[in-house]
Length: 266
Image 1: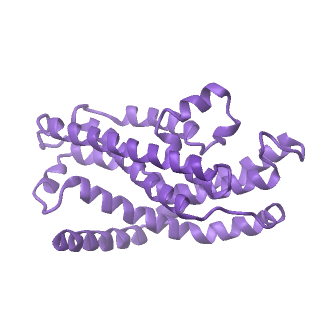
Image 2 (image 1 turned 45 degrees about the vertical axis):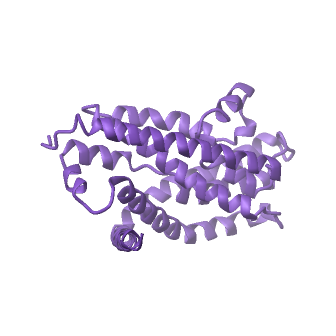
């Protein structure tokens, strides 16, 4: 265990430095995400006409998108592109002889980047808070153990689910088209584009069946008080279940996918 923790610490330090070295590209990605937080609250405020839509008033819309944007920086994973490239180019071979598993390596690598990205975003987040100060007032936020647990489990769920999807690159010559399709249900059912509560009934029913809502949607609704304690605890249980399913899926795909892997590159 001590040796594993030393490996994790070394990898985390290396990839934090890597993320800071290429922070310009990180700022570009963050700026693209800012478009949603900067525009969607105004769209919903205009649509509500100063009233409320399904319990969301002006303050609620602003709080939702600000919380969602901040949590997305830490929770949401997108590393399947790197995994597919390393498999296609035969670079995966170098990871097979390392003293830790590829799953552990990718977890620490992704965690380091998520921490760097969140840190880089914080100054921009403070600017957004200042811009929307007229709508925020004195919000009542839920910052208890259910929130922090849901954030951590949301990150792990996003990682394990994306890891399972990335393992498909061991079977497919080009998995990028499949990865593109992933963003359609992810953006809608996770609540990143629109609050799930404002979607039609059939969309809300899909959201509670698939894992996407339990990555960012659940912790966002917990922190702004849209989910009570009992619902939060039930949601955490579903997060744990989806983590187990995703981990098992990636383990099986990894095991059988290595039989197809040649490592010669393209």
